[in-house]
Image 1 (tube, rainbow, N blue to C red):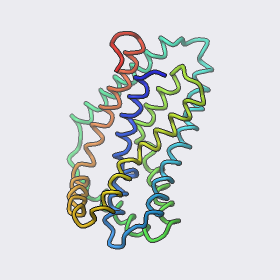
Image 2 (cartoon, rainbow, N blue to C red):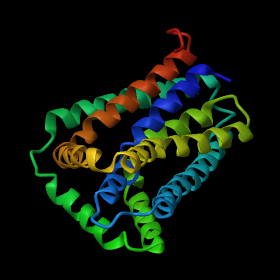
Image 3 (tube, rainbow, N blue to C red):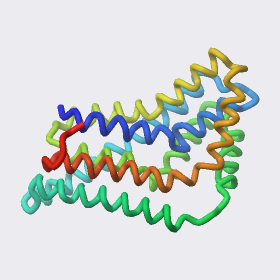
Length: 235
């Protein structure tokens, strides 16, 4: 298996682990006055991981079908050039956002999410609904995931390995939240002020993701394509 592909997928999964649904909401759940039980938090995280996995399978099937239909006109080299163009395009988009980003208060957005968390953290079905809502609302921002799916689709590995890697990707996405939960259980009082500071930092910096996420994804997608074309050494 291509080591560059696995490394790139791992990096993209870790980027995805910092989204509202995979990290911010779990942090706010941990900060609720009434502690969320282990089973409920696991239910929330597994729900959003399964949502990503199912969406990923559907998108990958569609992408593979499109690739098969174009197989007669596009060889692997052409496909890699298209991947390279997409990566460069994402870098340009990130630069555009950096230049044109409007000064607006992101606190309203995060306050709305915290209100949803407070209203839906009382039961397991509500937490599952919250996870699905976060997943649905983040579909249009799944740049790391879409980049990962694109690389899996253009790779030479079989479908069973693709599905396995996609499942591993979804699990890696929730690892940081699980680590924070473990720390919270072990050192509850000591870690709570740190989580509060992290939550406040999120409220201020959440809009910056519109710049650095496409920038990192664009670099990784372009780097992977350049490696496939033999222009640079793989990671």
